[in-house]
Length: 417
Image (cartoon, rainbow, N blue to C red; front, top):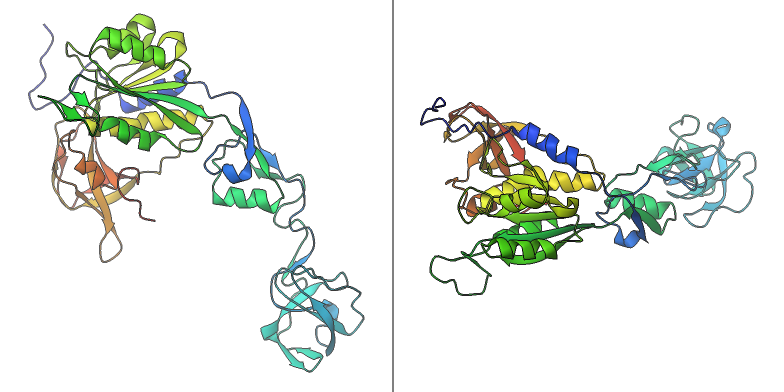
């Protein structure tokens, strides 16, 4: 007989570490090939398929960075006659003779005979004569051709998730279409005879399925479509039918049916028709996480049935996997340190992620407090939270006042912006 673990220890020798689980998942997934050309107006949140180089110089002409007067730097100490205006979209037409300057506005083209712009606050104007009161440096307030981006320079690297800044760059360079990674297809279902759809009256011992609503909201985004396959009853035959319906997806995600109960069929079906790469991870909540490939090489995540466990395993494993498939680097924000307001308890043997509320004290220092009851069925612990408090594998918890590792998120609670 093997050595028995103490009753206050939560280790499972068959579990693997979080780091090893992540390595197995990402190592087994090959990024998508192929792309599609779409209008830039539809590209928010999509992933750029290849690096874009600037097709033009931006700005295309020397432009003024200030409202003021364009002049020759060599004549900065002389009285200068105003001989015209250069407005944004309406450049000065002509040459600037010696001893002259041009009134200019921000963004307007600097006349070819001028090399410096003096802002209007640094001149004194008497009718059409300007006297510079604060002497400028050569080239002051003149934006050079290509100073934003030069023709042929790298504009946006491939693998970038297109956001407001990237879309503005595309528009500024006159680009109306863009090549993006093709849409990633995710099939999703819940398992369990105890589940009914929201809106349907539960029978004896039944509950409404919250996991699909949670996971659709967590996983779906521009460039990722989620096919909702509904609730799969607890039978091998029903599971086979559901997996048949998932063919054509890139990834299948289920919740429930991955534990060791007599009605938990997901791991067995996966082993029979594909391969199981992960079954248990040394974390709480979410130890019974299954990952592998179903028939045809279809990537499969079997998440625990309790909603908090499903949410956290999706956040820590499924979302990074989907980003990897789309060619993105890990976009999770880095962990931070915060002072703990409450004492937290745990059993050694697993890394534990407790839900917390991160805020600042009067001095602007980060503090975190628990959301309360941490059982894996308590959905309000997610809705109230804006972070996960990570408690190490061998710890027994943390005392109030200690520094703890915190992972901020905005996926489950109301976003701050």
